[in-house]
Image (tube, rainbow over all chains, first blue to last red):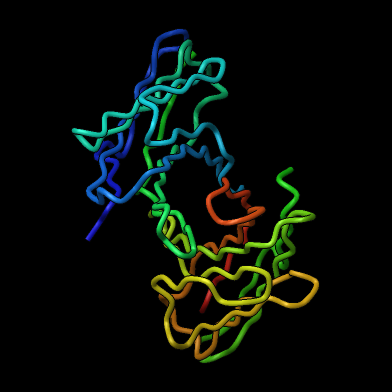
Length: 114
Length: 112
C-alpha cells in the first residue's frame, strides 16, 4: 500500500518555463512534507518542506503547495533551469510516528530542455 | 556535501555472503536512518536508530540487521545475500525525529 504516490514518472519542460511536480498521499496522520532532489549516483538532497499548518512555503525558485483536503501537494519550480534536471521525491512523516521516518513517493524524473 | 559519510561506495559480492555497510552521521545528529533504493524505484525505509537505540522499523528483512554505536556511527549488516538485495543503500541523519534528514552518498551493493 503506497501511502505517498507520485503518479508522473517523468516530466519534460522547456528552460525558463514552470515545472509542476505532483504528489498525493493517503495517510491523514502525515503532518510534515518534504521534497528532495536526487542526481544519479548521489544521495537525495533536501529542497523544501512544509508543515500541515501551512498551505504554501516558498524558497527562491521553489514553492510547495499543500492541499490537505485533497491530500495533495505540489512543487513549483519557476523558472526551470537545465541544472534542475534530476529525480524529485516527495516524502511525508507523521508527528506521532515514533521514529519519524519518511515515507517516500516513487519519484518523478524532471528533464529541463535548454 | 551533506556531512553524512558512507563506506564503501561500491560493494560487489556473491550470493550467500554477508556484508557490512557503515554510516557516520552529521556532527551532532542523534538519529540515523537506513533506506534501500532498488532499480530506480523509490526509497524504502529500513530502520532508524536514535542515540544508540532502535526507534522504528520499516520493511527490513530478517536477514538484515543494524546497530548504532556510542560514537553514533551506524552499521547495516546484510547476510545470506540474494540477487534481489542488489540496490543502493542510503543512510540519513537528523538532529532529532521531526527534523529534516540529510542523506549520505549511498553504497551501491551488487550481488552476483
